[in-house]
Amino acid sequence: MIDIPILETERLRLRGFAQDDFQVFAEFYAAERSKFVGGPATQEQSWRMLAGEIGHWELRGYGRWAVEEKATGAFCGVIGLWYPHGWPEPELGWDLMNGFEGKGYATEAALAARKYAYNTLGWKTVISLVAPPNNGSRALAKRMGAVYEGMFAHERHGDLEVYRHPNPEALQ
Image (tube, rainbow, N blue to C red):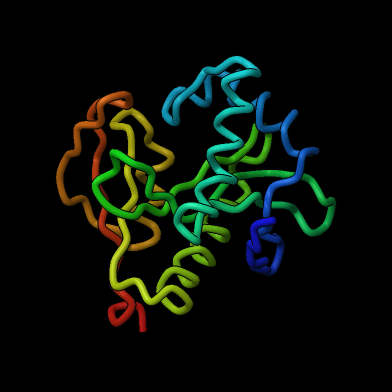
């Protein structure tokens, strides 16, 4: 069993994935909203993506968390640190499940994940990759202080904008 740390914010708990998360995860990946992050996808493809999220923790020692609303226990997102083969460098990424947009959850969880990357893992930098039409992700990266750095051509996702987050010293 992988030991995934639990992070807590005011409204959210960032935790490891549970089998009960799969249906909500698959519904997100079946929806058109997932087009910027590898979807739409079938349930079988979604299962493999979820297994990849979990396996990333085993292979890298860090990964993206399942995000849960403290008040309801609802699985509401996948947010955290991601560096799969083919990525230019470690990324801070976020996906909110259907119906959880517009509540500030992505910002709240992403700030906690970046703090973990810098304070616990000792990272000195992190990027976020944004599909050019994804205005919401671009706005979040900018809200977090990330600055556009250029483009990255991914073999499956196509051209992605690279946003560099402030380093730990700049955040103090």
